[in-house]
Image 1 (cartoon, rainbow, N blue to C red):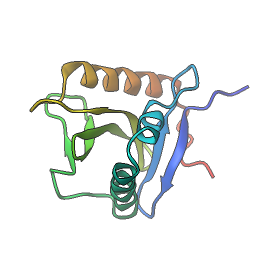
Image 2: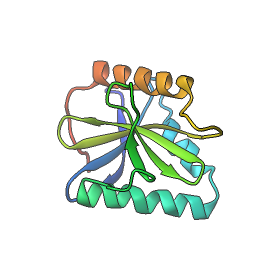
Image 3: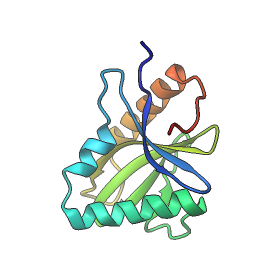
Length: 131
């Protein structure tokens, strides 16, 4: 049986946003988002939909590249962060979320995202969006 690598978040006009799924079947970003207050969930949903439908978010207070990373990005809503990376086939893979407490994204969160990205790339067969 083939193992699930992602779960669809939003099939936009430009990008397909997907939750990364660990080898054990967990989706850290999905689980983290589901435990947030509803208002924050709605803000993230609006950002994710806009990214999928337009392919970009110009406001760096909402979405930005994390410097000194291997193409790791973060969505930002209040003190909440969802880490992600782009993948072949106009896919944006959401790895996990966390609450940011200081000025910089913690090194451990970046390392976690890079680990998930490597794992995803190793297990991927370039399937693209799933319906």
